[in-house]
Each structure stands twice: as structure tokens, then as C-alpha cells.
Length: 495
Image 1: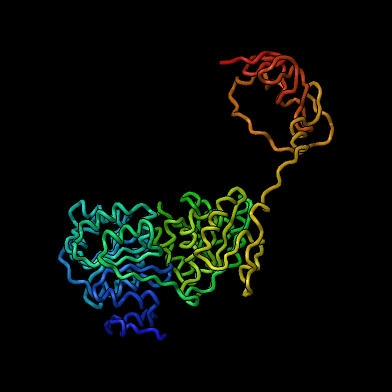
Image 2: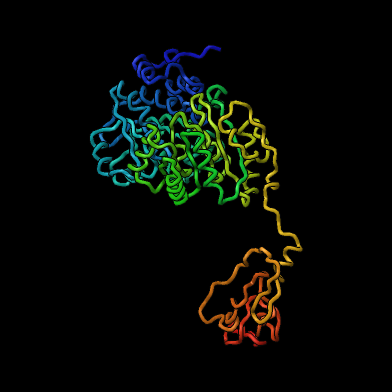
């Protein structure tokens, strides 16, 4: 089947010329499916994977159909979950709107409210907003939704994941009943379906899977690691493949890892919710230009990073869900490029990983089950990578045998607090209660007199097991003294 041209979909020549100048010569599948219906004024909901061209799918008809606005009363509203995504939408729709002599502006937190107010008073036709800043402007009486007859909800599933649905509903309740509502999302179920049923009128539904050629060749590697090895493992990955995006679960973790990688000689910038808008924009610009080779980001930024040519995505921390995995991983393999995704799986998160991998089977083809052998050649090879096969439990540390535990309990022998010169037994240091001055004066009096080469010194002078009378093996030995534990057969005191 021949792909229609933009002109055949009803796109005016002036808009088509703008697209051609930006390198867009033919529509993506989601654009082919939705543009004609949107230009006809229909409500629609479109589902397509990340990086499939959803932004142009709603930007083109919005720029064409939007009418001139009065000050403070935009006629088109585009809602996005993050500042980064708002900026990306602005870069796409602004030149299209200018051809139609329409003005577009973005509004989001972390920027000057005074500047936003001034722009609204001058007149904004298309407002690209995050929910929080839009609600603030409405409450100040500077933004009216009464004339918004085109409403776009972009990344609706992410909006739901971030807890914005109550605000989105309050916003939509203030728009005209005869508005056109365009909803785009990677999924159309759950909370997103609530929006569809409540706010759309007989919507046209389009669900498009990106063609394999457009998705690019993305390989998924799952490597079992010790938690303390993740930094070195990440460094070795980044030394082989760049540009790279590394995802962490927390903002503090992102800052810490960015500093560590910088110390390792990797040019790195961090991006997360606590960074100012200027810092986030500079980091993205430096990454896009190649001034830094690696971004360390949290999930808040996962959908806002739209940079082609990313060579590798590293899940330094496991994503919280299969959806988070897909959106993080979608930063590589864009526009038909190749890429690799590496998930680092610590020993203590194997159960979480098993659940994640099971949930991903509906999202990714030929995923397999288990872990790959760690092989850095898989990062750059053109050959097919074997499916993961090693069960996660095979990578767990072996538990201590019963005999080892017994030796750890008894240790070597000692006399009078002096340890014997027997064989040294390597045992893990037991977890101890925090030391409080005076609390263990009796038991600690001679606790370190023995060399403890046998593990723990026993039968020392005046030693007494806590809570028992008489001489016996104790964790530490000492010569009498008041305290929670008393030496020389002293009874344990309460209180």
C-alpha cells in the first residue's frame, strides 16, 4: 500500500514546505492515520509507541485549525506532563503556527510567572502547558479556557502516572462543550480510558504499531551485578558506546552518579525535577550538541528527552514498571537508528526483575527469560545476541554452609582474654547495637584484650553471657563492672 503524501491528507502547501525544510518528507503511520480526521474536526485518540511521530500528528491540524485569540483567552490548549515535553512540542508547532500567522507559547513551572502573564496579555493563540502552571495562571485570573475549542492531551498515560488526572479533569471541565479533543498516548487503557469516555464525543480510535524499520534495531541486555559493582559496570559500558542516557530512581542518586562518572572521566550532566529549568535546558542542549556524552536522568525526564542518535540506555536502577522500562528504553533506536539497552540487576532485586521481565513480554518480541552472561562485545556486535537464559537465582551468592555457621559461632579458643594462635576463620562481623557510653561497662572492660584470631575470644576472665549468671561464653569478655551486662557471673540488670 502506497503511503499518502501530506498534501493528500489535506495539509496546505505552506505547512508542507515547512516540514520539508525540517527534513520531514512523508508522514509516519500515526500521522497518516490521524491527520485527516483531526483536520475534519473529529475527536480522536491515538496510540503509538514513543518516538513514532505523535507530536506532528496533533501539531499539524492544531496549527491549521486554530483561530485568532483574544488576550488571556487562548483558542487552543496542548497539555503535556513535563517541561521538557512542552519545549519539544513548542519546537515542533511554533514554525507551523507562524506560517498561519498564529502565536504559540509554552507555560510551565520553574519560569517567570510575570513573563507568562505578559505574553498572555499580548495574546497567545496556542498555549502549550503543564497542568500545574496552567492551574496557577487560571487561579490568578490571567488565563481563561472559555475560548479553547481545540484541546490536545499529550502523553495521557504519563499524565496519569504522575498524578495529574484530577487537575486535567478540572481543566477540561472549564473548556467549551463543543471543543475538539485530541488525545495521544502510548496506552489507552485504565485511567486514560476514563478521560476518553468522559471528555470525548464519539472519538475515532487509531492504534498504530511502529514498523520495524522505523523502530530501529534495539537490543536488550539484562546483566546480573553486585550492587556495589554498578558504577564500574556503567563506566565500562559508557567507554564503549555513546551517546548514553543512564536512568536512576531518585534525584539524589542521579546527582551522585553524575559526579562519580565525571570523576571517572565520562563527560556527564544530570537532569531531574530539582534542577532549574535553565539547568535542564542547558543539559539537554549540551547533550544534543555532543558537549557531554552522557545524561543521568530520573523517570520524570524519561519522556522529555527527544534526542536522535542515542547509542545506549542504561537502567542503573530497575524501572518501577514495564511502562517505565519502555519509555526509558525508547530514548534509543529512534527514527530507525540502532541502539542497545542494558539493565543492571542487583542480587537483591531478582524477584522484582522477574516480575518486570514477565510484564515486558507483551511489549517486546523475543525477550526471553532470565539474565545474559556479561559480555561487553554484545554492546557493539552486529551479530544476533543469544536470548537470556540464565535463571536469576543462579547469580545469587551462595549461603554459608551449616559447618561454616557453626565455626562462626564458636570461633577459636582463648584464655584470659588472649586469643589462641589457631587457624583464622573469616566470618562476617555480626550486627551490633550502637555503643552508648556506660551501657556496657562491664562487658566491654576487656572486650578487645584478645586478638580474636579465632573469630571470638571465649572463656575469658569474668566473661558472662548476657542475661545469665556464672562463667560462660560471651560475645565480649571483661572483668566485672556495672552495666547492662555484668562480668564474673554478674546478673543482668533491667531498667
